[in-house]
Amino acid sequence: MGTQRRSDRHWRVNRLLRGTVVVMLFNGLASCTAVAPIVATLPPSQIIVPEHRRGLLAIRSGCTYLRAANQRFTIIWPDGFRWSAGENAVIAPDGGVFRDGDAIVTRGGDGSIDFFSNQKETYAKLARCGEPYTIANQVKGDLL
Image (cartoon, rainbow, N blue to C red; front, side):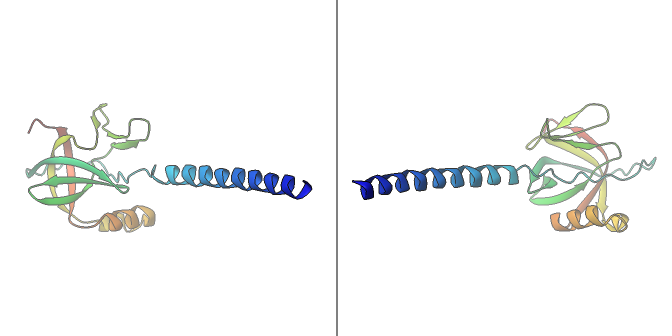
């Protein structure tokens, strides 16, 4: 009888520990998906580039992209734009909210991340997002 009781207790403790490990792993994985995307911005500029790009905002794997005409451009945002984890969106200085899947139009052009070479973390994140880059002097919501 004593052996049976120890075996039952062992089984229950083993089962409890396995459940705890599963919950810990699940919580760890859930927190891994909450990576804030890079919203790199350039200093203010009075130069307005006339080129427009229309497309959809895509927020994937810590990056923000403009998906347009079968291309994907990593966005370098205008000064003052920021990521809001609470909104799960990019927020404009005027309060505009840009979420994954939103139709947007950018005014700007092809860009380079060389401007960020002295900001090692920002440069590395943008490099991971990949080329081509688009520098956006303006970003607005768009009705495609």
